[in-house]
Length: 121
Image 1: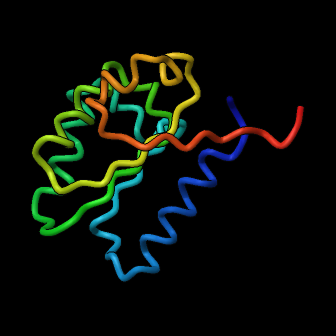
Image 2: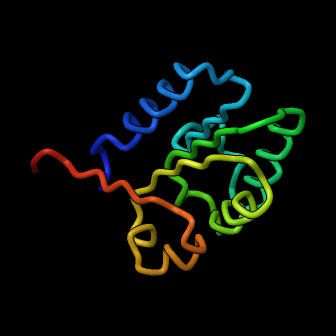
């Protein structure tokens, strides 16, 4: 669903991560509703941008992508990060495809879903 607080929840997780003495350089937040990230159109753009941004960062890294459904074939990049990087990945989305039963297959079972529902209609 749209406008139910997914972005706010994501920002709270970022704040909590920072409060645990994780440096800002280890955190990458991509908000696909912002024109700042309009250049990330597909999985390759996402992969290249994240790899470049984290190139010289040692240890655990944290990737947050808000409205990931705006990135074509995003699951390819996410699966690649799962398989080769020390990156915790947090994504939000409001697309029927993200709610599909294919999501576990797309992400090879390596995810935890946190449903966010509105308080009322």
